[in-house]
Image (tube, rainbow, N blue to C red; front, side):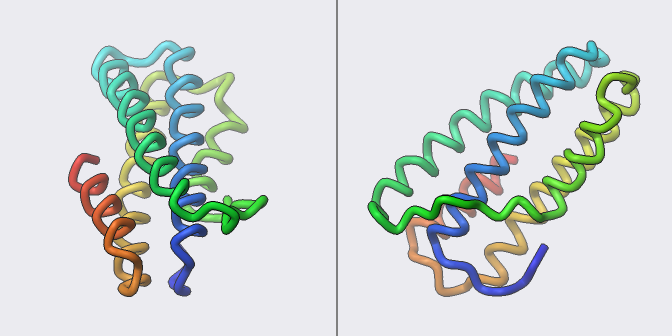
Length: 136
């Protein structure tokens, strides 16, 4: 992930994009159909992303007109998904599980990198990042 400092709005909107992508990935991997162990993790991840999106939307409402029209989707997480999406029609349950695991590891790393690269975030944004990271 890029280590430049980001504004709170940029971080919030990036998180919204990531969790929207995560929900899309859950939907696509569920359609494969997944191995039994992955199916439960997919359901949980989808529900978790719904909760995380709600938390970020609530936080975003504090910024009013500062919301940006475009969101940076050039990060490791999005790249892993874009690569997987190209082969989703022929993906096996095993490769689907490997890809999803890779995405989840990348997601945790993005949270950690965001916290480390942006030490001066508002307390509320830092709290949400730390709370969500602990739940991943």
